[in-house]
Image: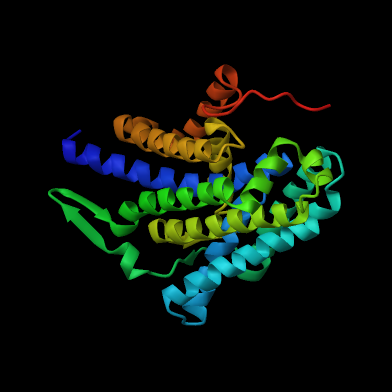
Length: 297
């Protein structure tokens, strides 16, 4: 493998890892507060991609206006899901909430199939992101270069919100002890809604960047990225925002370099994520940056 090829593969790995990280933040924030694995998160990502397709191609809106609409519509969808599927079960056993999350996931996939058919649709071209740039013998698209930058900037914004603002303080208190935070007068509904707003906005951003890199939109497109982002959150330490981003980078780099160094294992690229999950659960169950916690009975 030449140096140029290695650098190109590293850039691709960092870029896809950044996309995993963006979506993984939503998983880890919801889990940190509700102790809920929001299995519908990958399908919210899928719906965001469809929103972009229809706002840009069907309605002919400029991509920069469509981006705002897509983020707003995805945030609204996330809030509706939380109010309809999760809020009524807030005091129910966790298993009930998890079953509800799985139900929402299947509902969104089947709704998308019914409304948009199962035929893949082309993602709209965003010239600013799809334009190719070259450095010596390395050729990359703009989206490959800017995705890690956008991810790190958004990570800083999320960390600022959680560490430096009043609502962030309420989030951290709720993540430590949900019931005590409620008894101390923290508006739990507001905290949870804010969490879903942030997670859905990041999923929408990830969908726009993902579609620019992999321009095919179909109803189950969020399943595998959703699973991988959940794995990234577990690898980094689910409940830890920085850990989720770290897990995303590790997962993205790992699977790209596996294919680059061992081309014969290309068909097992997706399996790498699950092997990594098994290894982490065996040797560091709380994840790389996770803290040891005691489960309440």
